[in-house]
Image (cartoon, rainbow, N blue to C red; front, side):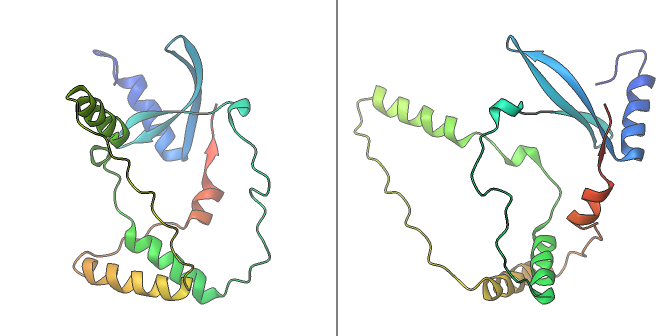
Amino acid sequence: MPEKGNPKPYVLLVKALEDSDRVGIAKVTMHQREYTVFIRPRSHGLTIHTMYFVNEIRTVEGYGRIADVKLRPQEIKLAEQLVESLAEDFKPQQYHDTFQERLKVLIEAKREGKTIVEEERPKRAPVIDMMEALKRSLQESGAQKRKKPMRARPTAREREGKRRLAS
C-alpha cells in the first residue's frame, strides 16, 4: 500500500513496472529469515512473491530435456485453444489451504474419540489419446463459454520474449 500522505513514489513504481513489463527484485526479512522476492504490478498495486535460493531447488535428472516428440501444428493449435478456453482472471479468494482444514477436522475427530479411517489412494488414470482428450475438452468448455467472448492474449512464447527483470 502507498505511504499515507505521499502515494506518488508508489504510484510511479507501479506505473513504471506496468509500462515496462518488468518486475523488481528485493530482499525481505520475515520470520527471522531473509528471502529474495520479486515485486510485480497487479491490479494497479504491487504484489510480492518469495523466490527460492539455488540450494533450495532440487535437481531432477532429465528435467528440461524434451524427448524427440513430433508435434503437429494442429496439435499445438488445439492445445493453445484448450488453454485459452480455460483461461480466466485469477481470483485468490477461490483458493484456500485445504490441508490445514482437513488437519483441523482430523484433530477434532481424534479429540472426540472418533475412529479415523484412511482414504484409499486414487488409482492411476489410464493412458489416453491426447488429441481426442483435447478435442473433447474444447468441445465441453466451448459449450460452457459460448456466451462469453474470447479475449486476445499474447501466447506464452510472446510473453516470455517480452518479460525482463529489473533489479
